Image (tube, rainbow, N blue to C red; front, side):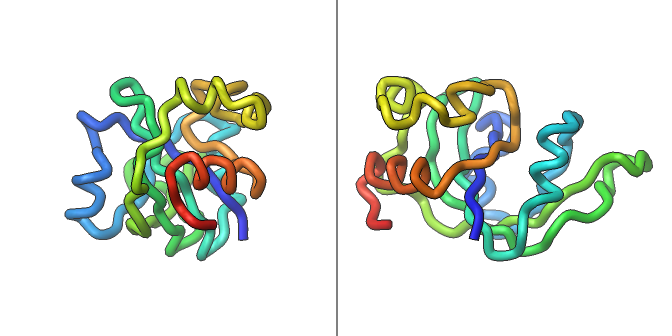
Length: 137
């Protein structure tokens, strides 16, 4: 299994709305690195749900339920989407400020590549963030 982080602006699509919807396709990615990350995702992978621009915190975990396919919002072949469903709300959100002050997370993509909307997370980083959230790994 692989781990990822996806970013969503709460005013546009919040964790709460995602839970109400139950499943969604992850669209709107127009960055080649982020697109390549979508293509690398496999069914069953887990994804941190990060509230960007507002909140700046990881609030939950989503699960990949359908691997990359053509983005239905565009006719351009270059862009793909994946389907995700809510897996778990974190006991305690983990803020970007907390992540930046954790020495073990200094190489995390969220710290190094702040603007990338779809990012890989290593297994070690996943465990550390889960520990910070008060969750069992």
